[in-house]
Length: 258
Length: 307
Image (cartoon, rainbow over all chains, first blue to last red):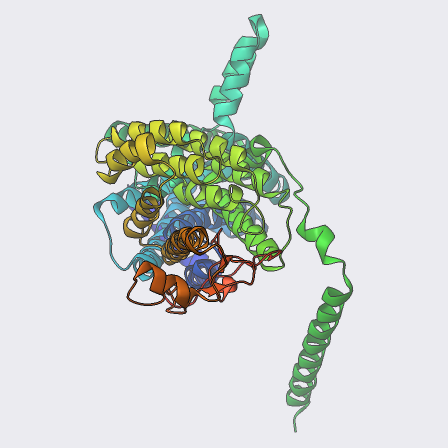
């Protein structure tokens, strides 16, 4: 990564921290502590499952919300405040600006996820009193959640490179929901015939496949997650994020900022 | 006092007053709302729909539905309702969302199978639930054990119970008592010793307090049923020998040359009714006992507090 990208990324991270993005950790801590303490009293034998399911779901949803709502403002806010002109008047290329913003937001989410992961493991220790080797799949689930964030960040940047913040948020969130049904979409495509089948299958593969990145249930049941899936999901997320980021760069390079 | 400070104090006071007011009104609204309609409603009955709505977070949704099932059963059991219309659908949604959620099968069958007031009185549905669980968790021998249990205790299908125990005993890592249970089903299904074996296994194989307490209650009830059967046989022998009813159980004890009065698991002697029936002194302390109960006695669902 060149120095200019690193500088923009670190500034994006600092700005997110200054915007109190990490305050969501407080809500997360309260949610998890309450669940760990109260679920044992109102349910039967699922304390551990709830801590993992609720913890990882919250990590994922909080992160996606941050990725979308911070991501959509990364470009538009700079244009609105006219700080973008100051940045671009220096020897910074437009693509470097986009890539720097992406890494800054991704870094914020990784830091956020790191603290949330500490919370999840803390709550798990509280309810289960000890860790077992099967709990290592929680780390893989967290890694997949970070991969999910990379895709959502890139999509938010893509939409914000040509649309208003409100529309970008709607587009990004819609794509997140559609991507959660990716398996179903592929299933529907197989039910159709001819040209419709080609179009449906194409559409099913264009939307991000978030369902393959969701292994929360498997982690909760301490099921082993294959290293092949880890490798392929990593490649998938890198390719998809790179694709969305390339789209964002292409659009932003041609955007008239006057 | 500065204007800013004054505003802060007034705003803080307004906040506290409004907060208290809203809580009080909310409490009042809670009291006047018809609760039963809300409690008994299951808005989405399709597990597929719930799965879609969960956006892939079906594990968490399963935990929520399982907690709802527990609360639904617990609440209705507590208020001594005899109908549990939503329990089956709640358990089906829970297990469809997470087929590996084992407590939903183990406890769900316990909620569904027993006749009211101890359960929903739906043993067939409990059996369906357990088969679904076994289909998705074939490596778990406990599910076979729980299924056999339903066949034995609720459906009294000892042949089927034996088959299920036998099948479960073939699962790698299965507890050896499954083999013993399978053999007992074939020869002595209706014996007290078999029932005792079954509930002792339930007690020993679980770490869960409620399961162990339930097993303990059943073991106490089996003891009562066995004692009452033995005493009643002794009373019959006394009648045959003396052509009259005994005036008390002491007469029976003397005739049988026993050491003393037989006592229930709480150490209280059994009683003899005027028509020669052996009765337990405090039937409420043995909610699962089937013998020795006064005529017209209706069991109160409760668990004994002392192990």
